[in-house]
Picture 1 (cartoon, rainbow, N blue to C red):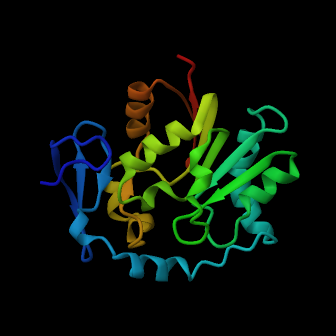
Picture 2: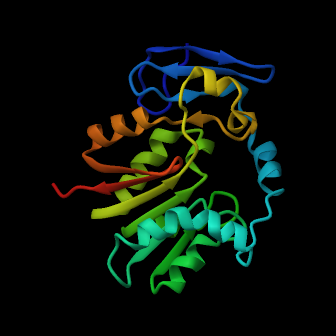
Length: 213
């Protein structure tokens, strides 16, 4: 069995299999993940992303993002500086935060690859519909922790694993760019391990606050 890509535990077990892929589950942090050999290559992955049409003027898309924008805006100081990690080809969350008086930096592996923005700390970091795509989730998770100032916030949006019965019919797993699947238990594990304050909002928004040491 493959080791967990999030917590490195060798204790992983078969979780499910469909016609496209296998899914394993870590017995320590409960992450469900696709084995590395069944992932898309970078060229295939980007071809999927190029099909996305995220328009900053799209009211429906803005409403979708407001599920994380509104709670985050209610918790940070005025004129905060944030980073939208994995912003995609049509950055929108950053525009919504700018409209609220905050300054924003952008990073995306394919579309905004300027790594200089990763060399400083921020009052908050957002990653909407990003974490499920990560091939090296622990590496990126540690990066996010280092990017946030003490008492700063990380705001995530991702669909969560509920149980095996729900997973079998879950449309979210059918996107071949989705390779790691988190549950509330996974985030609880990370929050306890990394000394983070954790809050779930609705079904797919996760807020984490970096506690001061």
